[in-house]
Length: 350
Ligand SMILES: O=C(O)CCC(=O)C(=O)O
Ligand SMILES: [Fe+2]
Image 1 (cartoon, rainbow, N blue to C red):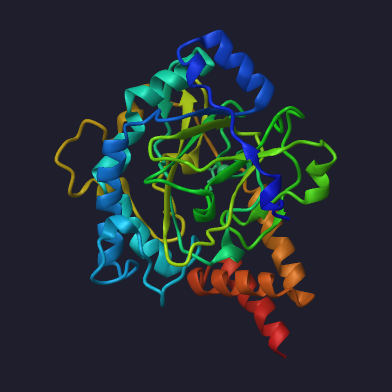
Image 2: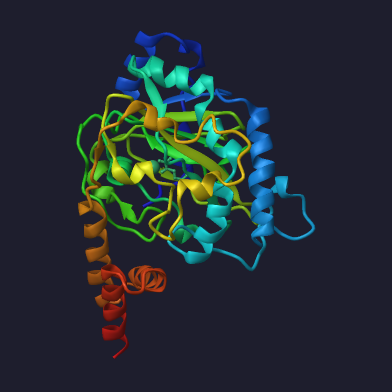
């Protein structure tokens, strides 16, 4: 359930306590997030925007003859994570050098180190979200990041739009104080990005409020892996939403294995060597190897449960679940999940 837009409150700005470790730590402990205006350099982000959207225009996602910086989507195209067509263009965007380098900006590294009082690095897997307008059934649902990224509860997500992101473009909203129960809540099948969501009843009783803002380029929202959050739907007529969500961890904490791989490499084979192919500097290539991070296996239980629920719901005629299984069958033919998705769909067409 997406809260009524009028129920959304403003994010609290923390620029006034930047650099004050004690104040940052106690505010994060209290509210479950920290939000900074202009934490990142707007100029670099606008340069990145131009580059990312130009690649998307070559991929056919941005309307021909328009300036890519405007982010005007080609009306005939709509796709998302999990779709083969999405991964193809996404991985082209993912080869962008600035996209990876920007995660190492001093302003972010200093802030996340202040928040944790530990030596922090960006996790190898960087993430961009390229969200089509009026494709709202696929919006990132209510979730906690731990189910996807794992490692530790202390990892910090830094979410930032690449360009201004007013509410109607579908920025991030956080549920203030929702990290406090200190555990992962049950996640269920969702058609939205990530495929897993928390049911309303499981957090509504906490009586917490949703917070978001009209983001300006450079603004950055930071939260740990148990804070409940979601994206708002992109209800604009024709604009793509472009954002970054990178994760930061202490150098002596473990990392889940999949976070050492490029994002969506599981959807379509994609290596760091391919990512780095056209870079003109090796400064930020394989940088994490200097830290000898402890690599732990991914816990598949969350996504397996979501998939099992999707199979069950599809059998009961749930159209979102049918849509999901069709997507899995299309991209993962021959794998265990792909075969199972096909079997369920075949059973249903009898
Ligand atoms: O940008 C989105 O749609 C999802 C982002 C998100 O869930 C995150 O940053 O953890
Ligand atoms: Fe998230």
